[in-house]
Length: 140
Image (cartoon, rainbow, N blue to C red):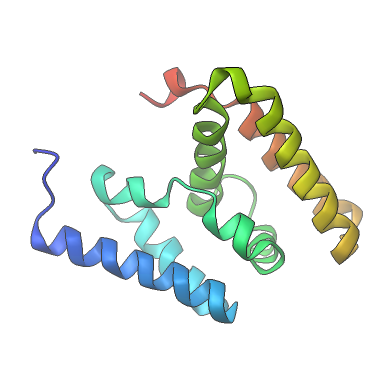
């Protein structure tokens, strides 16, 4: 299979982008349910569209609520969030320390705003630790 996407693949990617945008605008979990389903059932080329941190940074509380309520860091959206952080941290090896500090600062700010329970804080910390331990060699 080549890296070129079929028309169906492009439509699915457009759908993924649309579902992400709609979730960011509305925070309706129905969009995450659809994204989660697509995430588990797509090929690797379409799946690359899940490896990012956009939902985390643009809709933190509702996104974390969904991940927390729907399992652990083993669900598809959480796995790809962790990979997204890993890639963010690896973008510039000289900036890895600053990237970690930005992530920690963002999480601390959100925890201050939303007053998460101890269990939710532990879940968020687990995501952060797994992101910091992400190694591209493990994913290839």
